[in-house]
Amino acid sequence: MDPASLSVQEIGEFGLIDRLRNLLPYGAPSVLVGIGDDVAVLRTEAGRLLLATCDCQIEGVHFTLPAVPPSLLGRRAAAVNLSDLAAMGGTPLWALVSLMVPENTPVSLVEEIYRGFGEALSRFGAVVVGGNTARHPDRVVIDVTLLGEGDPDRVILRSGARVGDLIIVTGTLGASRAGLECLAADLSGVDEPVRAAAVHRHWAPEPRLAEGRLLAASGRVRAMIDVSDGLMGDLGHLCRASGVGAVLYADAVPVDPACDAVARTVGRDPLEWALYGGEDYELLAAVDPGGLADITQAFQEARVTPCRVIGRIVPREEGLQCVRSDGTAVAGPDHAWDHFRKEAL
Image (cartoon, rainbow, N blue to C red; front, side):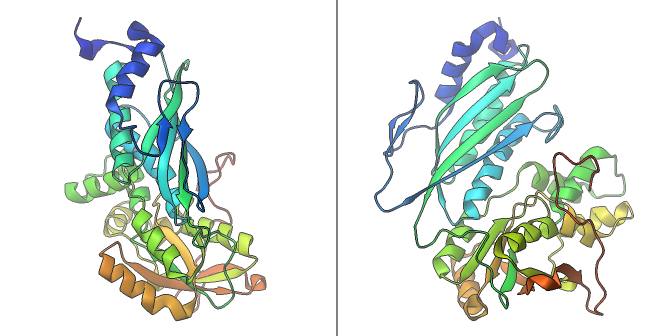
């Protein structure tokens, strides 16, 4: 039988685990016992904090097959967790992966998912140390727990923003929403390079780990979050945690060129997608104004993704708003993405 045609049912759970184990990088000095025992045994450094996050990717909710290449699906499952650690200024170390698939799933598809996952982790020095596999009646589910470390003096929470702080964001926004639109419809008016760039940003977000560590090391960042639920939604999370309000400058929001092109093709406002589209996985931070020059210089010297000022923190009673240069407010939803709300943003 051609190995490429095998299903997970044909090789069984433990045969699948053996194949996946051989695909993944899992050796590291901090891993005393990795894949193959009841639990992983890991060594942490004295004086460091253990950071933990988890996220999942569910077929029919976060992705559809075969629309997404399996290797990019694996990369995405890693990236959304890596981005959480980036928002804390942390360093990823170890991942645990639980995979659920229908019994007729091709082994080759599972291997490609894990190959993409392992490659994404290894770029940042992290390894897979365990997990689980199980049968699901009708869909693929990838559930990831990621562990990392942080310096006690440099772990950045959502809750430290102060009135007068500047709001900065890395990179550009709205490309993931544009990519989702390209996947949902045949947009003949969009140039293929633009479409490809938008779809790639949707399926393969780039976690800003180096940027997060630079921001944390500056000592001038008071609160930080990654942009997963949309810029306005995640800024709202940060403001609620800090007990403050915020004003964004609409003209300063960095709309991605692909977002601009796709949105205009379908008659939508690119700014709306940049503010509310979500899944860009850029970093959003509240910064001491006196530290902005040092942060900008550090980013330039490290040649990482640039950041820019897009607003300021204000008293809580002023609320959360985005204003144009003429002073008019940009209207939009009053909540971030929520899996359990019926309406879509």
